[in-house]
Length: 218
Ligand SMILES: Cc1cc2nc3c(=O)[nH]c(=O)nc-3n(C[C@H](O)[C@H](O)[C@H](O)COP(=O)(O)O)c2cc1C
View 1 (cartoon, rainbow, N blue to C red):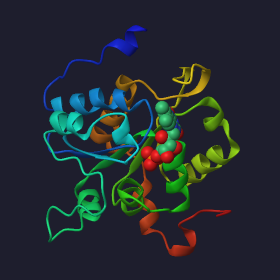
View 2 (view 1 turned 90 degrees about the horizontal axis):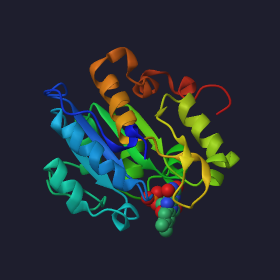
View 3 (view 1 turned 120 degrees about the horizontal axis):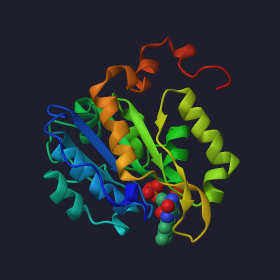
View 4 (view 1 turned 135 degrees about the vertical axis):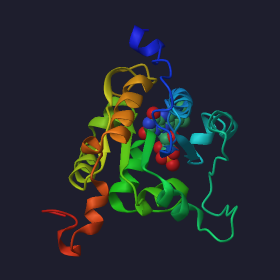
């Protein structure tokens, strides 16, 4: 492992105090790296709510993220802990940023086509805050033109991508598709949360007239 892979910078005060971040975990092996990301965001003062797809819970338990974030971890659209709130809407309304990590080929495809068939895809679609994807997948899945077209479409719409990087993949291939290390994601997320100029403009699409929201060719 390189030095960058082994250590995240130590917490330097509550620089993210008052910031609310949703970390949405989908079903890839890189889910284990997200535990450290959540912990470091919390140490820097951010309020972090983790949500998971059902597949993600096969890789890391909700209890891990519940313990690190100090909050319940919703995994199901139909859990409504507060009857006055529709959970997927209420959570995104309070958030400054939603980080999807790892982002599977599946969740990217669902986001690009507007599918909302479980909690995470529904929250991405409903998000009133900017959404950032941290893809992680096999190199052939990443280079599949369908995935690439989905990424281009989401990018055009103002969604932001961190990575993926080239390197060793869990399928024992080497190539593009490796989720960026938690340190890189933390760095970019902190920059977005503390410097409005670097914040993705996803939400701008909501302010455009309907015929201009998708851009050319959509
Ligand atoms: C061991 C294992 C590892 C997987 N890793 C990935 C991955 O890194 N990226 C990915 O896109 N899919 C991966 N998959 C496939 C996804 O889990 C599968 O497409 C699933 O339907 C994704 O669901 P979700 O997007 O709702 O979480 C993996 C599956 C298995 C069994």
